[in-house]
Length: 251
Image (cartoon, rainbow, N blue to C red):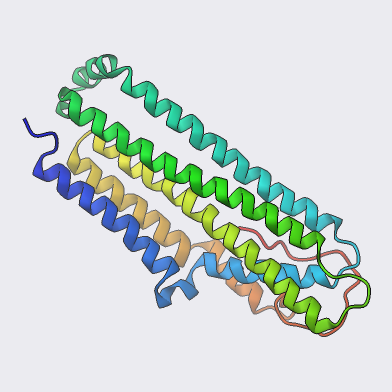
């Protein structure tokens, strides 16, 4: 008996093509400049520029620490998910009885079930590596924030350093987004445990939801409109700001 049918292989190919295709559209294609992620990356750089003009930066460091803690939470969740997948591998017979009671024929082949669970484990392992690296990058970004030139340095030097710190923050946010994307696509992957046809539908559903969030969500509208406001945080005003208030630069 074949482990995977032709329909299973087609559904898996559709899943991988959807994931890789979505990644290419939002991160590599010209359309990436119209995404929510791109708008927030501009705000991240703008945040660093605004911070470089403030004499008091305690708030900025605290907010950056909150971002790092959130990333650590998702990394821990990935490890728990991996442990849950291994638990599924050791509970095959129990799961089979439940799935057969529900009339799901896909659960009758142990080799097929175990292969699907291994695939889900790999998705969560990928997410863990992305969240783990994002955690380190947020740590590096915080260090660069602490090393921001102070006193009376040359404005050009401060702006250049702030943009580089913003670039580190953008890089961290990018890896965090990829880890979350793996989580979202793992929801679509769960449809494969029911049926290959369900797998097609759940993958499509996840792609539609993610596409809407990146290109047509209210969050994107707000993020883009903030760039067009009179107090554009990215514009270099050429003067030092003394107040500590600023627009929220986070997704």
